[in-house]
Image (cartoon, rainbow, N blue to C red; front, side):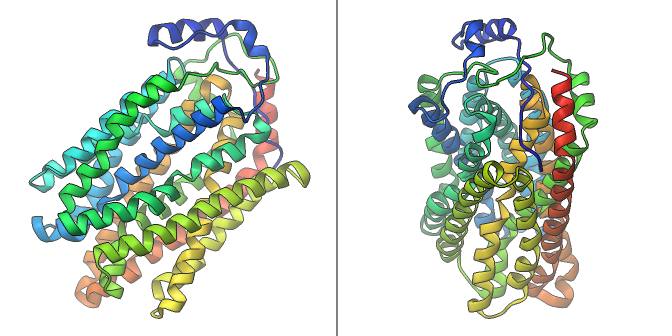
Length: 458
């Protein structure tokens, strides 16, 4: 794939008025022409805080996987119902609200939008610990998704204004370690809280810090000027919602990125919900043991994969050939599928555990490359919306269909295979990684032409 150059499209005067209305600092128009250094204390702090927020984003949505056995026993519901609650109930508002929130983030203060959403979804995480039936659980998941829709897309837009295109993949890779940090640091803590004090207290403990951190974020992080690190001219007009969608849908690379992210969403979300149940049913692990095993293993390997992959894509993109910024993540996805098959079918811990570790290393390598590619083919005031549409497809099919698909097949195969049914139902999750890798490979072939197209419309 060719280099991730960006077409800058910001209206400084319009941005200033929007920022005034949302309480953000106003940057003079002349500053748009400057290109400040990437790794300053200000940019590093902002990137670090956004990564911390994303860590809670992943933690709050994923710990339900640890609680599924206890919820199933207490509320006497089927795996199908739990698959719907854990996936569809969360993702409905997450995906639907993500697009209008991103459209607002392309116009107003992204910092304030993130902070409001962070506080709200953290409160709904706490409220999950207070539910008494499956319908209340579905409602808290529903509203948690609405809050979390304020997180990733506006954060990606901010990061794209903190770092130049040449270093943006590495910045997105650091941001992409959030899921691994969540698994490594917080997932085990929540697991032991759940085992010692109950699954309800686990949700309260996960949500409480976010309410406080949201306030700290508003007080210490500034809204960056849009397009401040861009090198080329910016279009004078903002595009409407319809024009923005039409522009993106005419990009072949963007369409392939949507497909690749959707397949990988099926893989990541399906596995994150059902791997704890798989280990309990197939290998006999308990909640605390699963949290202590899977959390650190997935966290360390995922963190290393995303970070080393980011460095490798950044280095190869500058020193060898820019196409490696998509080729490497495509290969990582293609290898993930066979490794997950080994994890699911092997009986020996000495076989399935290394396979799980290797798949955890490779699974998230694609994310920083995909985010960097999305902002490369989108203009400056399209970036949050372009990212949100991608998340919409990935989340709607990934988190809604993935957990539900596994749960439904579990119930279908249970009369024949009993607890071992989950071993075969999750094979479909492994297949989606291979399909995702194929689509990312195609996206890399179209990137050069679509970046040139974006430049031509600047």
